[in-house]
Every structure is written in C-alpha cells, then in structure tokens.
Length: 605
Image (cartoon, rainbow, N blue to C red; front, side):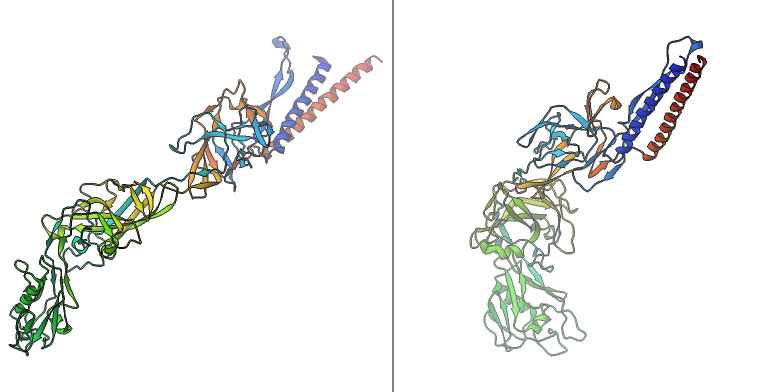
C-alpha cells in the first residue's frame, strides 16, 4: 500500500468523519423538531484482497443508520387536534402536488410520518406543520363502525348534523311502596290509590279496557277516647253524648243547637227528649244512637255500619256515597276521636278504563299521583318537547286477598288542557309488584303509540325499563326516585370543532352538544421500519427493504400531545468530540505521510 496508500486512507478517514459530523450536525439542528428521528453513522472498513499474512487495516467508508423505531418523549399540548403515537406506527399522510382554486390536488403517493402537529385548515383538512395531510377511514354515523379499510385524506366541513327523532327512552326508578299523594291518609286503607269514581263520567283513567270496578266500602277511624267516669274507661256504644262527672258520658258535652253535618245533611242536637225525625238527636243520647243517625243520613247499612271498639269509632262510607262528616262543636267532636272533617272515599267506581285524564279532572289526578320525572325529547325536525311522567297506584296488597300492588304510568299530553281535552295519557300497562319489590311479571318496555305532546308528534318512542329497571321499595319520602331517564334524540347541530379521542378517532363537537366519531385515524406499521426512505418534513416513503404498510397492530394514539425529537444533545456532543478527535488524527497521518515523502525526495538530492 505504501506511503501514498496511507495518504489515500487518511483522506478517506477525513471524508468519513466529515460525513459523521454532518449527521451529528443535522441531529443537533433538529433536536427541537417534532417527532424527528436522529440519524446515526456506521463506519465500515474496506479490506483489499491479499493473503492472510499481507492483510492491511484498509480504508474506511460510512453509511447512515436510521432510528425510526426509537420513540421520542410524548408531551402534552393545548391543541385538541395534536396527536402522538405511543408505541409503534406512523400516521398515513399525503401531500398535494398542486392547488386548484385553493383546493389541494393530491399526488396519490402515500407517505408516513410521526409528526402529529395536525390542525384544521380553511378547507377542513388536518394538515401538520410540514404540510402533510392526515389520512383515515370515515365512520358510518349509523353503525359507528369504519366505512371500509382503505385510508383516504380526511376532510371535515361545517355541515349540519341532521336532527334525530326520539325513538328510545331509558328509564330506571323506584316507586315508593306507599306513595304520599296529597289525598293519602294513613288512617284510611287505600286512600293512596287512584279512585276512578272521583273522575268525570266516561273518563276512567285506568288502563284502557279495565273493567268497571264495583264500589267498595272505605272507613275512617277516630282516636281512642275515654268517658267521665271515675275511674275513666274507654267509650262504648252506651256512652252518652252529654252528662256530668262522674258518669258514662263523653269527656266534652254536646249541647242543644250543636250540629253534625253528614254529606251536606245537618243533624241537630236537641234538648233531652225533644228530638224527632232522622235529622235530630237528643243531647243525652248515646254514641250508638249517633252512629245509627250518621249511617242513616249516609245511606249506609249492614255490613258497613259504623261501630265503636276500645274507645275508637270507625265510620263507614258504605257503597252508596263517599263520606264527609264534621261538627259545629269541635271540642265535643274531638271527644269522639275526630278533628276537622272525617272523610272516607269509596274504592272502585267509574266506568270502563279509558286510559286518559281530561282537563276537568287534572287537579284530582295530580292529588292522586306522584311525579315520575321528565325528559326533553325531540320530534322528527329536532324540535324539543318536554315529556312529563307521573305514576299512580291503582291497587294495593294491603287491602287483602285478591289485591296486588299495581301501578299505572302516565305521560302529559297537554299541560293546558281544559274541559274534556286530554291532559294525561295512560301507557295502558299495569305494573304489578311482588312483596319483594320486583315487577311480577317483568315489563321490559312499553311503546307510546302515536304520542302527541303539546301538539307535537313524537311518533311512537319506546320506554325501556329493562328486566329490573323499575322497583317498589319503601321510601320515607313517599315519592318516585328516578335513577335514569335518558333519550336518544337530538336537534340539528353544526360542527364547531374536532378533537382526538382516546380510541384513535377524530371526534366532532357539534353546536347541539353532540360528540360524534367522524373518522378513524390510519396508523401504519412496517416490518422493516428502519429501511424507510426519509423525505422532507419528517416523512417517509416505502422501499423494498421496509415492506408495504400494515394496518391494525400499531401503538395507541394520544390526543392533545406531541412526540418530541429522539435526539439526545449530550449524546450528540459526545459524538461531536469523538468525531473531531478522529478527524484531527487523520490529519496527523497526512502530515506524517507528507514528511516521509519529503524525506524520500531529499534522498535524490
């Protein structure tokens, strides 16, 4: 090889280290470039073909070594469309060949990058800082699944999201086993129920087709009271309505001129021995006589006659009328165990169930039912409609054999209904509950057939309860505890912004509050990642060594984040020092070779 060979080798060493210095320089220059992948330098020795005993160290050449598979640090960013890949993979992108009327015309060449600083441009494309346009697969808005598998350049325009009519309402609630309606009276069994007989003729609100219920007796019991005897004992049917102590008379006397009013009919107290007819009673008559007079005026007969036992009077409505009893002498009336007006409302009555509450009966219905929540629904044009629910208990197991805890669900049709206009509509389904508080049988759903609310047609939305969505457990508040009431409709909305979801999808945020998946971002992987061809802007192109792009096994996409350069400044500075020293050493070889050549030339002198 000789002196001149040494010179040539040293020059090759200078060239190789210059090449390494160029890579170090490029790495340092791009230390802040988004998702930049540093380029390392590999040195390769060049050995001339000689015998084993004549082998030389040979020359040197260099080549670049890619670090495409080495990930940079992922850092959060404030832009919703910025994204990073945590793990393996590249964003699929394209670059325009030219522009026509401001619209990009793409060259059709798929490129790949990890630079995720994408932002929406004026035309609705997601473009990164190097001018590459993001590709993905649009999402079918009906199924929520990708529409195909071939990536395409994504474009999002400010189109309106069409309104969706409400078709499904998910409802979960607990009904108080004893509802505290405004008409309930714990002393009156069944007073918490809806009473069909209290509604206008021909407008029984029970489920459509419910047979007319026969009237049933209702009772009202007074508190236990004692007489003026010494010692005092509980009142009996023989206890007198007035008398001096000590005697078997009530604790506070009725006097002549006092009245008791029974369903609008007046019973007047007269001086002893002067009472005549059904509407008069002697002040010194007994409690038993008074109860007989009340029953006569009420039209009640056996087996529903009023009684007294252990000092407590029980009044019966009977089957003919509801009962309402009050007295002008409140003190004496209290001595019988009552305060104010004693009422008892017959059960049953009414005609065949019509499943509707009319305007005339609205206040009655509100007093016999409890609120069941509300939800804003939407018609086919996206107009909002407030859908109100109420529950009414129509039967209770506490009434004995042949009775079960049964409820009806109503929804409001017209909040301003008057006269015979329909105010509330029964869903026409009986919800029955066992002693354990579970529906028996289960009612998984009901359909509001041709529902019209406040003049707006809702179609026939389905209320979905599931198998155990409605229960009947004790509730001290006596109301409906609504756990869920959600519907699937929404008004039309305009796209306002887009962001990146945690599932690697582009999410559109609309003015109607909806967030919908618009596209699935295409992330490609390669068997030969480090054999991709680098092009400007941190992008890569496919080569024979890299293999074709593969989709479906990439890392995860992190929204509002960016991947930094994988360049380590400290490492590059170390390489810089080593490269400088190697370059200087090669210059020493050239200097030494030059000295030796000069010495050789001096021999000829």
